[in-house]
Picture 1 (cartoon, rainbow, N blue to C red):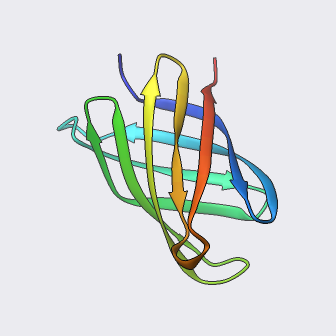
Picture 2: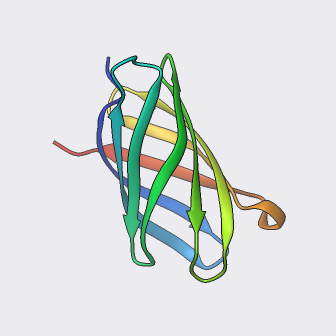
Length: 101
C-alpha cells in the first residue's frame, strides 16, 4: 500500500498536543518524498524525505518558537501513522496520525 496521502497528526510535545496535517508526496523513484506539516505554529516543508517500505524518514526546519531541525521517522500501517519527532535536547516526541479520506 502506498504511503502517499494526507494525514491528520498529533505530536505530543512539551507544550501540549500539537495537531497538524502531514502531506506525503512520493517521488518518481518511490524511495523519496516531499511534503509538509501544517499546524497551529505554521507550516514546515519536509527535507531529505526517504521511503523504505512503509517507513518514512525526514527532517523539518522549525522556526517557531525557536530555530531547530526536527528529525522524524514514522511507519504507515494501513491508514495509521505512528512514529516520533526528535527535537534535539528536548528528546523524542510521539507522533500519531490517521490518513484522511
